[in-house]
Image 1 (spheres, helix red, strand yellow):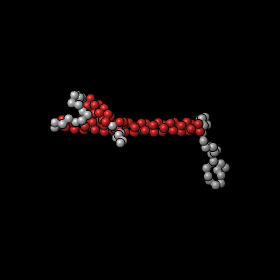
Image 2 (tube, rainbow, N blue to C red):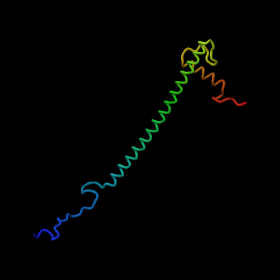
Image 3 (cartoon, one colour):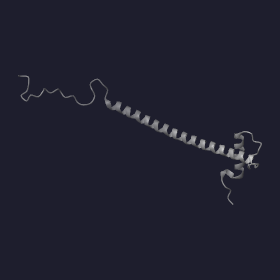
Image 4 (tube, helix red, strand yellow):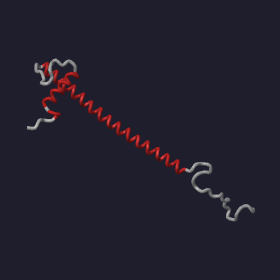
Length: 119
């Protein structure tokens, strides 16, 4: 009974300072490296998200332009069937794209730079 103290508590282990186990590199540089990698990945994610948003907006603009072009072409065909030829679309244009190019050229010729001329 000489090995135990009179309080009955187990023997104390020598205290190990908190931090790195012996034989391992200090954690501070490793943590800083990981933080830097995380910041780089966050920046990459933000960049990719903004690229995606720009691509989505561009695709929506293109879709609206296509819908408008199809609407205009259908309207022009209806007017031609009714006996009236729409102004700015000569009947000699064969393809859809040719018709759109001619319409754009005619529209630009009427209004300089897409603006209503001031009087």
